[in-house]
Image 1: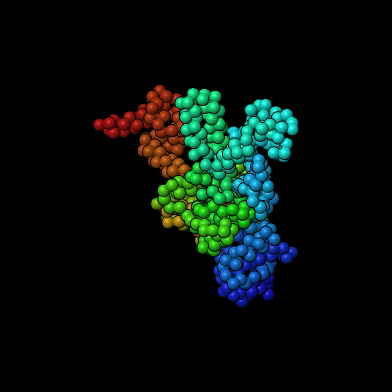
Image 2: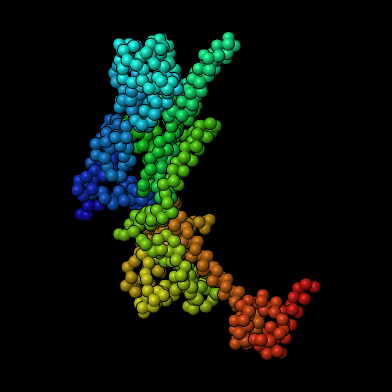
Length: 614
């Protein structure tokens, strides 16, 4: 019994209970951890319709050698355990948010007479005030520096009030950046007021504080206390600037997080926007390789669980770009982290929908910023190879199409793409001889590929290079004909049919054995195949129209007395088109054909023109 059959047999014995499953490779390493409402239903999906899996899932399934399960009492318990198992095993095919990124807090020692601001890794169990978490230690330090400079707070490590008056004030006090409590320049009460104002700014309440200072400034000016009014004005401006530029997400005041997943051509991006009191405060993003648009719900659910477990703080409202898997269980998990009610929802209208559109736009911009044109081409080739189960990443493609008009002028076209770009010097066209009349695409395709492969076998330099993959514009019948031709010539290269939907748009790829691969959810592969299919169709149609036009011209010139095949060819060598022949004088025509024939040609075109004008 093969290993795959053993896995199928094991799946049939699984319980329909909630739990966690751990996929392992041949070395026994855990490569994926997942959660399920019903283990049997969820795990069995990995071993059914594998051609319809996303590239990421297909690649993971290829490496599964065994799996373990852990049955849980509830879906919520399974969700919590899944998160712990991901932390423990760091599986290759799960989203992994690093613990070392860190989400620090600002600690304000409000229990001291002269409070200090410091950056700490986590909340302590003390009476100090904690603000955050922040996106990183740099952001937290910058926030402290900004409010300290705006409000003249001290940044030294002197112990107050013990050290008041014991040493000369530092350079910051001399530059006006510190209110110098160490020199007794401000009272303990006034300094505490400044600290309270700094906390307000960090919590996003700077507008209310700025309005209060403006009112105090106006009152001081009316009472002709101009020096104090000027100081209040400067502080108001500094606080406004600090409030606008500080990027904190305060724990108890984080109103909304907006989380969006966007799939680019070669990778996905999850962006989180933080809003405090309706104002934007921070952005974080995570780039994801090997994803597709169909992965969105699963990726968002996995990201949210890990992100807030690491961060330790959840706002009351979390907006997501699409409905995530097991949303109720995830919401319960967020409540357990936050210690209060949390709403997880997909916005449908109004201001919330506008915020989500902004998050999507930010994710798209991050993708565009990171992706280069060369990288997109390379990644699309890698994804194609992964989706189709190829042993190596394809480098070149040859695509074929058949075209005719009402069963006449049947032609074939061959286009070549190398490194994701058209190689026009290697394009080839075929006039199909085996289909003289009527429509028989299968026979035409067989003739075209047979001629191409025979030229390769004969050592023709123009056909010497074989592609990594053959692509046929058509369905299962077309690709089977192509496969049979390649087999006759001993060519084992992969061949796929490019299938269209009812609206003549690319739907997917079909293999000779009938397996159909959906590519619509993988933009890079969808775009690549779409470009190839459009190009081979365009090239075939163009050639077919050229022949049709050439036949019409031959028919028209053959009606002129004295113009046979040789004289018709001579006229085309000289004038290149019927339009130039029509515009030529009798003398110009005489330079190619005898005078009598030149006059006949001139009369033919101009008598026809006169009839049209009349």
